[in-house]
Length: 85
Image (cartoon, rainbow, N blue to C red; front, side, top):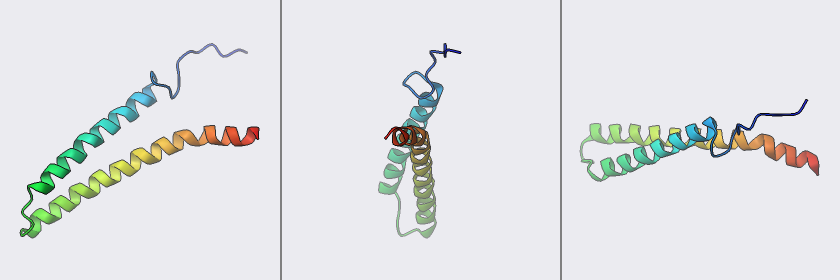
């Protein structure tokens, strides 16, 4: 039975691509905001430092999640190429 779908799963027009792109853009915005917040933080105030550290951790965790998602999507194609060798 031939495959007739022309909807890409992971290409530039796919919902997966759009979702990852949106996540990356949001992450970029949040990273910029954390950098701005860091430059305006009163480091003599322990509460401010703790809140800033929490924001940095949130952005770092989000970046790791996006990176892991992209790696997970790439893994099947890497396996397929390996199987061809």
